[in-house]
Image (cartoon, rainbow, N blue to C red; front, side, top):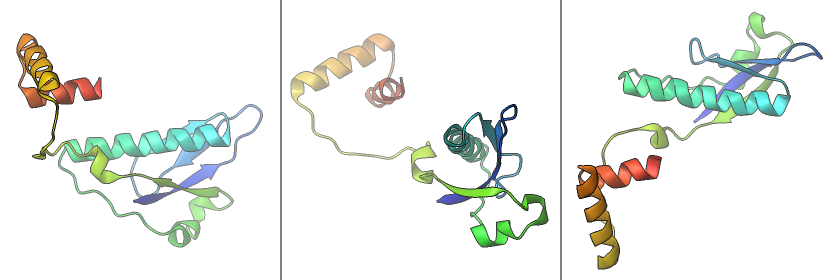
Length: 128
C-alpha cells in the first residue's frame, strides 16, 4: 500500500513535520527531509501494527490529488510511504520447510531447553 504523506518544510531551527492524512493521529518529524520520510515510514508501520493488533480495519489510502486539495495542507510537500501490510500481520501460517536432520535436532534441543515449541522457538529467534 502507498500512503500519501504531507511534509511541512523545516527551517534551520525547526524540523520537517510529517502528517499521514489517512491514518488519524499518525505523524512524525525529522531534521532532514530524508530523515522525516524514514521516520514517517516507521510511524505508518507502527500505526498499522497497532491497528492490526487491536482488530481495527486498515484504512485504504486516499489519492495524492484528493489530499493536496485540502486547505490545511496548502503549500506542503507530498510524498508516498510504501508499506507491505502482509509483513505486519501476526496471523499464523502453516509452512513446509526442509532442513538437514542435524539442524532440526539442534533446533528441537534448543526449543526444549527454552521450554518452547519448535515453531515458537524459530519465531522468537527470527524476531530477535
